[in-house]
Image 1 (tube, helix red, strand yellow):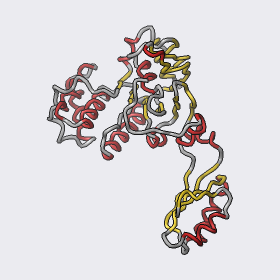
Image 2 (cartoon, rainbow, N blue to C red):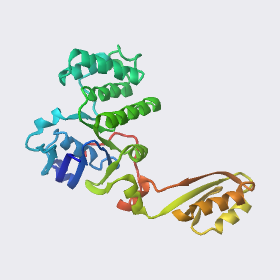
Image 3 (cartoon, rainbow, N blue to C red):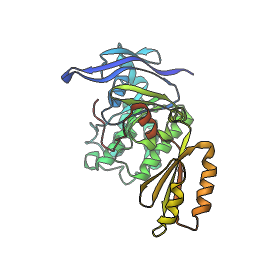
Image 4 (cartoon, rainbow, N blue to C red):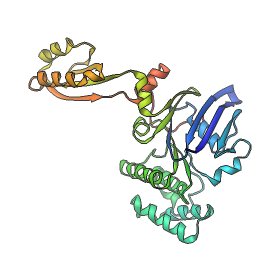
Length: 322
């Protein structure tokens, strides 16, 4: 499969404070791939994709976009890439539908095609109530949505999206992801997603890079990375009030069990033993104190802890330039 991006030994050092934002990062992204750049705030995610979008010059290293040298000729990027950053600028004086239409025209769409895609996006994301309102008078999340949908105009073959669903309500968040997956499946759009949202990274992307403290810490599919944590699963058990004593004596006798707090236990076991463990716990406690339970496979949070030795501290604040 053709490579959309090749990044070689990419390094960015900010002169102010001599801060290393990216440190010798190597990665490849295939055409048609949904690729995630995942890590905590300040890890270097935004710096990485801004260089890939030709908006920031690296200190050293090389970036190739369909064999075009982005460092030497950043002007090639707009022909292939739609970039959505964290700042919403240049749209406030236009109505919502105008922002989309004008962007499409600037990217070479005919009047008819720009109107068609604008109307389709407004209908698809149920935005008729916003369509004729000035972007400058919308809420923060609505402004970001106008900027995000403008990025889709004229169907760029590559989309670089930096925290695209921040500030969106759950319904719009789901509709955006459905649309992006449709673009990927039907048009072969390459989607590069920057996020510190664990759920998005885990369920949307096909491969991902884990960035921490400017370095590439892990690269692979979610399944490949999870296998680095070992072949274990975790059973969480919640007990009903008034039944703790009898149930906790039973749970305490199980190897690798931990009493997290009164009435709440975690049991770690190997994957092949999980069915037997679940059956044993359910049969013993179903009528004697079991309130709820869930079986949890390794998560990307577990992967991050394994690779970095740090506790995951992700949140919903925008990433910094570094």
